Each structure stands twice: as structure tokens, then as C-alpha cells.
Length: 147
Image (cartoon, rainbow, N blue to C red; front, side, top):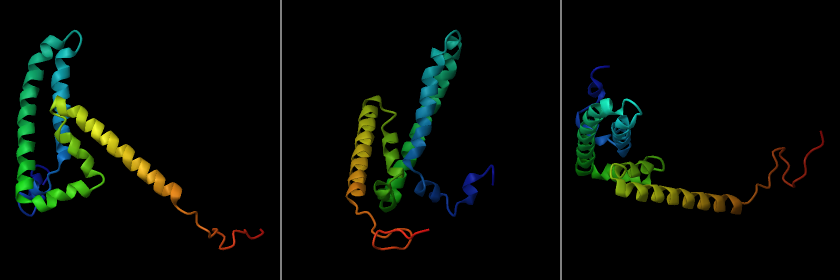
């Protein structure tokens, strides 16, 4: 099964059903490497063809991931919608925008603002919560037993 990862799935459509946006992170790393290789001091010119091949590979990878994620929404839309309610996986929605430089900043700002709002709401809830009146010693009147 090491060379056949899909053999562990009940049906090949499971690959589509389980596909999530975090896979787009691979295209970010591949794209960054493709752009950085020609910038290496001294040997950048000789690495430019490698970067170009990597860039073309990245276009194919992004196209594949886009097709899989689109298929997930078409075939399993009811499950794909659940991502918006998931506190961790929903953060990867921004990954979809990172291949587009114009949307990259918007995604970063949106994630930052959502994180700050969540932190503020969480802090308000914690600060407004009542402190328990029961002391760990078992006393309910706030006194602690003598030792």
C-alpha cells in the first residue's frame, strides 16, 4: 500500500470527498521555490531553467487541486460547506487566494481580523465568567481547612 495510497480508500471518489484547501499550501511552497531559484547569488542564472520547469509543474499542481476542490463542491457540497464551521480547517480557506498576489493581502488581513475578533470575544467571555465559589479543599464558604 506504500506505492498505492488510493488502495486504502473504499472508493476512488473518497479522494475527492476528503480533499481540503490546505493542499493549496503545496502550490505556495512550490511557487516560492520556483521564483527564488533564479535569485540565488552567483548561480541564479543556471537555476533559472529549473525554476521555470518548477513553475510549470506548479501550474499543473494548482490546476489539479482546483479541479479536485471544485469536484468536491459539486459532488459533496453538503460536506464541503462544513468547512466554514470548523475552527481549524476554515483557516485554510485563505490558501485558495495565495496563488493570486492581489488576493493574498486580503486573505492575510481577513484571517488576522478574524483572529483578533475571536481573541476579543474569548477574552470577554473569560473575564466576565464568575469565579467558582467552591475551593478545591471542598469548603464552600471560601475558608480553607487548617493543615
